[in-house]
Length: 65
Length: 438
Image 1 (cartoon, rainbow over the protein chains, first blue to last red):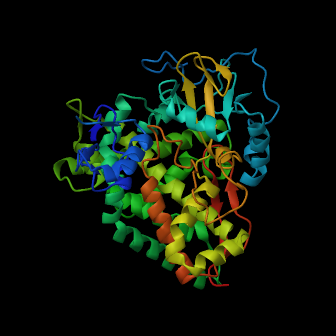
Image 2 (tube, helix red, strand yellow; image 1 turned 120 degrees about the vertical axis):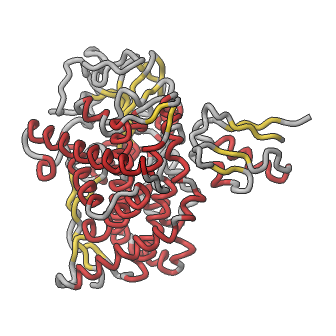
Image 3 (cartoon, rainbow over the protein chains, first blue to last red; image 1 turned 90 degrees about the horizontal axis):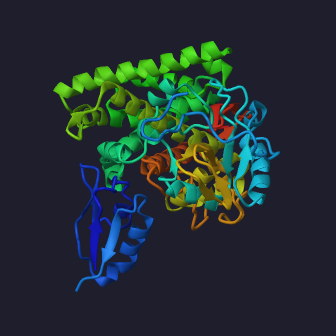
């Protein structure tokens, strides 16, 4: 799976960072950055939760291949 | 009436004269002068209607508009969450308060909380990094110190005064004031004055704080806002030449679409952060003291494992207190909410205090339960783009102050009924006498 951040929407609420600090990080520019764009399957649940929780609907998940 | 740029909607007109009103009163000063337990009786009736309900405008407002025919009351949890998430249908730009206030006042005070995308998106990013979970850990030492100092001050003041002190003035308001101003970069002395002026600016329904006549109230509101704009302007000028890591430096040196923020935009942002930073956590802390007294078995349960049980206790106290009672939205088009037809230009008022006691989503909502899990309260918002910027800060502060308080003064209790400020916006405890070591 591959995560995408829509930078036209993200305002750095940090819900995603709060759920998975090793994957998401809000930078000084006030938007989320991906520390790991393609996390392993074992992280699918938390990534899906971050996508669902995002207040600006800026996160999406794409299947690779 | 003033038109809002781009929307064609006015700040105050709403609805039409033919729509019948619900007979539950949400529009009188008398209603908003009662406490949250009394008001909840009315909200329970309205939630029972199972939809949104139409009500007359608030009586005797500072700004009267004959074209203001009322507002939709959003009292159900699910309706509030839906309205919050449909930010294209329900706008913040035309105003976020239930009452009509002068447009110049509102535009000088609300900044991003009263904006819609795309401007909202760009401005919120300027401050977002200061409020993330990781950043909260970086400033944890500051939060702990400010909590410790506030409790120490309370104990000293009580000791010098026969064992009693005002919990609000001597403790609850000090910690959030110092934290938000340490973050903003406002010096000691100025921060106390700014806090006081913002109490005036948010107390338009309280004669003691803002005056008796409409003229007095309007004059005091504008003077309070002008003070904060002047303070912010001076600090921003300083930080433009000598930037530091604080929020004012960030705003003073930021560029949006290739342009610096105007002095008015910086002032307005400063007012928003000052009010949101001071007035919310102060109220939650004050209400927490009363809740701990009203539910001694919950207090005992918490004291058995202060560290382990504090996070869930704080969530429950945040639900219980609901420091911000309402936010308003305005319909951008003819649409539907809760099965009712909403007309373009209609005001909707979301009642957070009601949604936080909605039996459909909160099990046993009238019981304070520190072990509640999950706790899906909507005190910080229903999840949309305006979700509370400072929610992590508020949580960290409440954990710190309650831990400090219950460690240093585990027997603390209120010694009189709280003095409340009538308001349909903040759930304000003005004063609360207490005995820290009875």
